[in-house]
Image: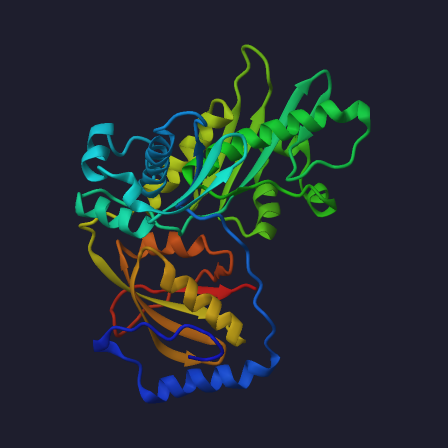
Length: 369
């Protein structure tokens, strides 16, 4: 292990040669002196939820565990109704068995962390597909025509405003919370744009409302989001909200309230990433360039290794700042490509590499700090 990095997890039939391992060691050792601490982003656990807790009910804890299990099962399967209440009772007769820890929350609630790995195994053994923690970030651009000439793009935080503008702050916050609440329940990471100077120079309300989404997609690149949701809302009776979703080179058009659309978003992404228990494994070579530090290597290797799709990971060659991995993954090359494109540190370089040893098309990415 080099400076705390994970050791390679390899198939015993395809262990890297001594020369290859020496090359990796020399690459890391040569760069060690110039490496600073790795930046980290804290992401809420997929298996931690907050549920209501009735203060005077003697069965409140058991009911809270049941609610927590139901919500986590929905996150793991990627669908809202994967299990009927009867099937959930059959597979998980004692939800308390899966509780790792709990703590009181505000307003008569309970934070519950469940054993997600065990729940996944139970679901897969029963023939259900599961979705791991490799979930793409969705950037939400939301243009709102409040009427009376008031038009706004909802930002990630509210700017300082006068008391007279407090109503605008409140309604913007409530609209954000409607999106975030459903996204959290479904286990979908979402973010809103900063709407700082850079965003304001790139995207206007008219761009969003008029459907000029090329500018919107270009402005989204700075956030490293592979999934982009554009909403156009005009509150009031008889009005129809319009939504566009961009992911994996495909565009989808939806209508409806934010809660309904975020559920559609979760269903759509879940269908792209769930793993069937009977799915075959595919060997796909993946070349990542731009790995010029031990931190970059550790970030890329750890992310690949922890992908739910990935069953086996080995290093085949090291050349300059490029490392060629051999990945054994559930599904096919296209499924793996979508998963890799959801990584904020990996950017497709556009070329397709042909592997002479595996006789399959490979994937090429560049590490982006």
